[in-house]
Length: 294
Image (cartoon, rainbow, N blue to C red; front, side, top):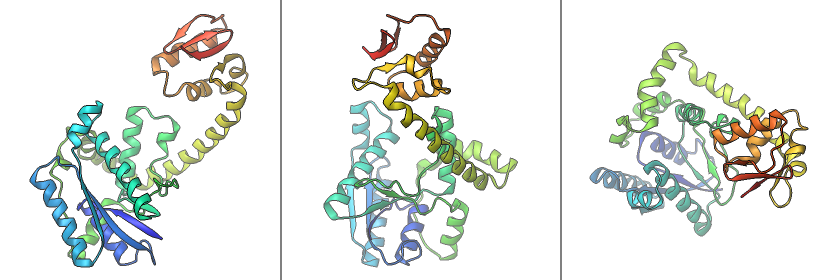
């Protein structure tokens, strides 16, 4: 198996790189490293790049590096810096997998990252899929992503790196609470740890159960899809309400088109049993019992 390690220079990715090179994470696999310089922290970003290049050079590991105008990309598309960086890196990773023949990209998300992602998803409003946490293997080519550290707490990673006397780079923005994840990490997570010192294991077990429930919900949705949604995309409301969990189906059928307020109005209108012909719900209009995009 040929794997591409996404290495930022931070403690988690350096732990992943070191243990991968030693054969602890993926025995008998070939590795190369990829590093993204997002040009967001000036000399610090360049220092991260130099650090990763030097690590690879000393160990004879092939290293792919690309610099991005992340701020310009975010501004041109009207998205956050975090979202811009995510889009840029994963698009490039997929390109490298295709052009260089890698089977997957390996990233260093750990148990703490997974718990934080769950909480952030809850705060955003995520539905059952957002409660699954991150997948250890996305299973999708050419964007297959492996996350071998999801069961390893951040504290264990730090303890191992210190015990081995290994170096890493500190990202100064990790303490900036203007970023939601950092605020959660520094102000909320400590309270979780105080209430339940085993919160990481508890949330990991919950995410596993959430994933099972979501799989059941997905089967239910797929079974209803062909009967309730016509080939032209119209939603047959009369068919939908014959299902016990019709409200969930309406949410799934209109997802990505109808916001929370619009969905609530639609559910109340359908539940009332009154004729809906001609009524508009966001980008949808009801015609002859069918909900269609305008």
